[in-house]
Every structure is written in structure tokens, then in C-alpha cells.
Length: 322
Image (cartoon, rainbow, N blue to C red; front, side, top):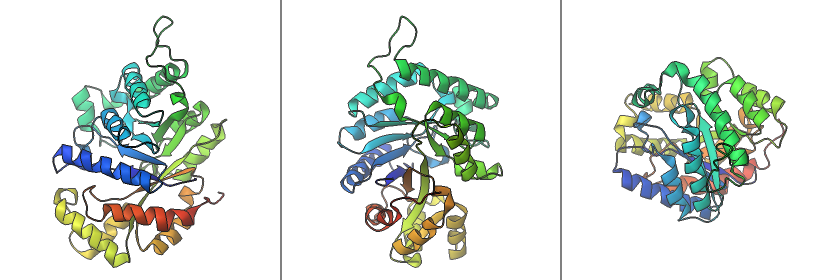
């Protein structure tokens, strides 16, 4: 890792235009602070209060306000997409961004969390794995040679976009296939934990098959402040402004349990650095995607970005050898 990256969850509640405008401002500030990539979370039908169902128009808009920072889709759920139609969206967006698109792909949330998406798009959830495997292979092929068929070419040409594909997964077999294909890996730790495994197993499976320079993006949730109590105060402000996002949080013990259950590192920069250094799940990462678990309009959101870039990330470089 040569610079930190940022993962942003756009949360519904305020008018969508305000959320989008504020997030573009965050992208501009992240570029000024030296972040390498900003990834935008996308989910359909406001699942988990998400506010960004269609990522490519938003990435194209963000590209017009930035010049250097790379722009990632985090992630496009392939079971709900036609691979050729997706390829067209991706190559146009990549052209508009000057070749800065990082194309993150996934299957959609598992464990029943994508039920509305499956119903809305008329895709049986029993087809999730097979649809993903088929469509990611089709997308890889189209972006590799720029041909839809022998007689039909993709336009604009994909250039190097094929080398900027990433697969997000908590499945060992998918991680292996991502490595064999030369794609980047965005290990989905929560899915793997629920399956009784670890992020390390996903990474090992990926590396065992990878024959190119590996790309592994580790997502890390942090809430940096002057102290643990100050970080809890940040969360309190978020709870008051977005109560629907926190339906069961009441006292301090609930807040601390929420942070622990979601593996959110909180407190001073020094406390967070010490805890991250002990986290072996991120030891093999080539990219660290910092996630600030606050609404984008939180008054201290930008302060958190500054603390990450100035007080946390520099102390984690270079990443330790696993």
C-alpha cells in the first residue's frame, strides 16, 4: 500500500441529491488529502438504507470534479446485470474518468439480505452462484478483447479496464477463481465469518492461484477522534440524526457492543494504529480501504478523513509481511 483508500457508504434519509452532492465533495477532499482510491458502495432498492442503486452515473459525476483519485464501484452485483450492457456502462465511465475506474464486482449480499433485489429483478436467489460465475466470465472475455461477438465490437474500446477488475467475495472457490483470472480480491470478511472461516483463508486461496501481481483490498472501519469517549460522541451524533439506522442502540454498552460486533476500531489515532497492527486479516493487503461508519453529512466526517490520512495511514506503511 502506497496510500490509503476510502470506502464510502451513501446512506438514505436526506434528499438523494444532497447525499450525492456531499459525497462528491468528500471525493474532492479525499483527493486533496492523498487518498489513492475512493470506493462507492452500491445496493438496490434502499437495502440497508443504502442511497446509491446505480453506481456508474455517480462515478462519472465524481470524475468531473476530480483529476487523480481512482474511482471504485463497491460493488456491482452481477446477478442483476447483463454483462455486455454492464461492459458498455463501464467503458464509457472509464473514458469519462480518464482511465481511473476500478471495477468492483460481487454477487449481492448473501444470507437473504438481497431478497428485495432478487424479487425486484425477477432473479431466483437459487441462481446466485451460477449466474455470477457465468456473467463474470462473460465480462472478463468482453473486456479482454473488446469483442462482443466476432462481428460486434465494444465501444469505446476497453483499453486496460480488464486489468482493473476486482471480485468481492466470502467464498473460497470464488477467491480461487479471482486469483486464477488475475483479478483483484476484495475479501468479504463478514460472509466468511458466518460460514465458519476467516479472511486469511480467502486470501490464501486467492494467492495460491494468482499468477500476476496480487491485488488485495482490505476494508477497515475506523472512527478516529481524540479519545474513545470522543469517538462514542461521534456515534451519538450519528444516532440522533439517523435513528432508523440504529434501531436497537440505547446506552453506552449497546454502542460499544455495536462497534465491537461490526469490527469498528475507535478511539485516538494511536489506539487505532496499535489495534490495526495486531490485525492479521489485513497483513497481506495491498490496498487498505478505510471506512468511516457515519452519514456523509456528519459534521465530523471530513475531520475523520484527515485523521486517517495524517495520523493513522502513515504509521501502517509499509504493510507488514504476512
